[in-house]
Length: 123
Image 1 (cartoon, helix red, strand yellow):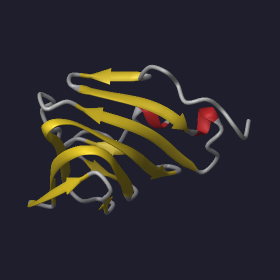
Image 2 (cartoon, one colour):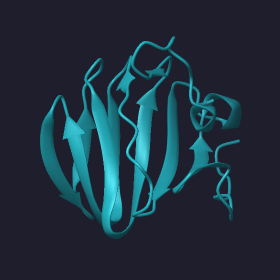
Image 3 (tube, rainbow, N blue to C red):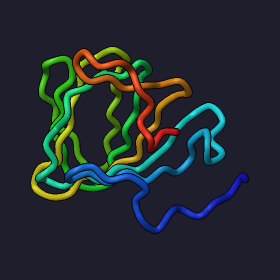
Image 4 (cartoon, helix red, strand yellow):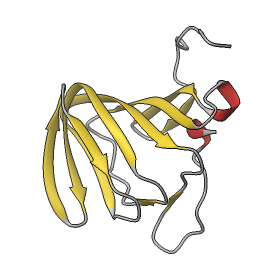
């Protein structure tokens, strides 16, 4: 379906994080997964890596990200590019942070020594 309504509630929750699937392989996104994420300031950052590069488009709020051991600050209106196989974490600062996220087809995440997995919000 070429045009759909954005879900009115998040489709997936983790402690302090809400993910809303928008265009994913199971929702009409043939080669790319797109979702929104809202991070609350009490969300503990989760260090992870991705098998494909991920792009965040910051919509609201401020965030601190650690990318390959380097601290960066991001705010609404900026774009965050996370290269594949690069250690990464992100956290909201001073209030809620919201972004659109884009991951190419086949992109998976992994934590430390875990096996790669496709996050449910990207399926």
